[in-house]
Amino acid sequence: DNPSLEWHSMNDPVMGGESTGTTRIEDGIGIFDGEVVDVPFLHSPGFIQMIGSGSYPDVSACTSLQLNLMTTEDYGGYRVSFGTVHLPEMQYSRGYHADFVAPVGEFENVIIPFRDFSAKWDPGTGDQVVTCEEDSQYCPDENTLRNMETLKIWGEGVAGTVHLRVKSISAIGCSSGEVAPSFVVISDEGSAPVLGGRASSMSSIARKNSSDSLWELGGLGFVGFAALLALAVLNHIRSKRNLYYEVEGSSSVNEVV
Image 1 (cartoon, rainbow, N blue to C red):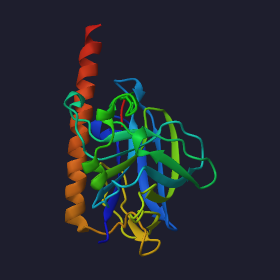
Image 2: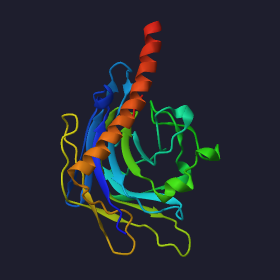
Image 3: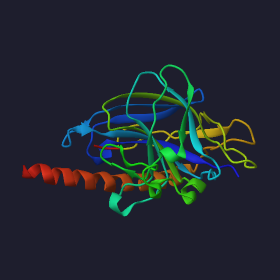
């Protein structure tokens, strides 16, 4: 089977922020550009996202996520998340979250062990609250690794300019006897409608070879893409709106992905 994904951008203006970001494909490279700025009534930085949704391969026999990417200038708020796991105490926030440092000026492999992801993270800042090492109940579960459902690259919780270039995504460290879902190459195919007045884009990921590609992005068509996008926007609006209401309520008496 050839897994397929749709890529698009989503930014904090859907929750009242002013950050801007776009996702596009040029010469086989995924380009994630934008600026993270303060959410006015929170007085703390918001977020921008590059989101891949669709059919994911089983990576439960693997140990790490590997991103081949670079940034053209230093930025300290890069994060990656996957899955839709929901903790009761997290209200509407979902997924496993981890930070990463992007190499500047040259493509390199960034390896993030799955044990470095946690389901217990702060939806206002993106920082982990309890790590997988500190409490194993927050480590990625097998069901999620069998099908991530969604993967997001973030500029979050740190004000600054995002200029990220993504060449490939892979799962590595797979157990003996398993075929490692390995490099994917982002290729030029298709564009998405405008989201909230800001251009967003989707792309296709083509196999680097027939035996070891991780994700191949294909077109779901406009209706399928619109449904995925609407669901993602709804989930994030609920999450951030809840956070913002809490902050506004407390401020009247006397941070964002």
